[in-house]
Image 1: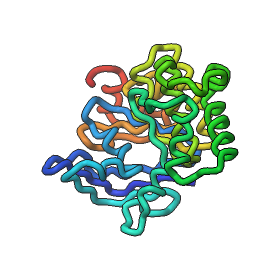
Image 2 (image 1 turned 180 degrees about the horizontal axis):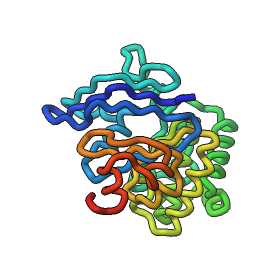
Image 3 (image 1 turned 45 degrees about the vertical axis):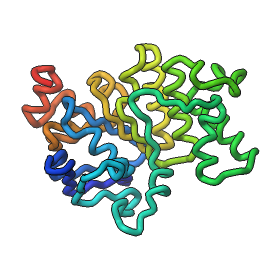
Image 4 (image 1 turned 90 degrees about the vertical axis):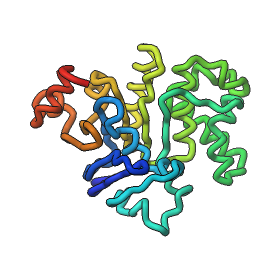
Length: 250
């Protein structure tokens, strides 16, 4: 079952065309890695999936993107509902200046949930899901800034999960982390795909190889090749992909 389907997507920042005719389908409960050199359109494509690019002036998109069969750029689409369904985790951990508990509860409160019992259950479940509970259970009411970078990033993932999305977008979620924290986040991603469909932008080729089911190689705003990760890394069909994977450029 395809969860996300993009067809003939073009995207412009002003006059500059950042994406050229991207068609890409993502299956449910898989991890899809977007790889390619800086400035090749990976993050731009990722942000189209929850309409984050709407926040940038003078941009334009053509083509269609559907999630669960619904056209997310249709005029009837409620963008707030879309963003509830499509969570986002950024490159640098960005906890709010609140307690650990309130960081995770934030999205629930913003979405109008006031029942204390529901909030508490969701916060605890989300923190458990990101394997952080044992580390923070005694300091839920302390500032999130007291956590290490790796813990903060897992907290931000918990915050995204609390509103119960079905898709999770991750924009280089481990690039600011040390190897041990990176490994914990990777293990987490592997576990989370049982419940979520995950699309991750990564510069780290080994990471793409370890955690993703499918890999899309972007170059100069074009989708050069998209296949099972194993195929992309061992038998790519395009020379450009092979050159990038083997480090000949990029």
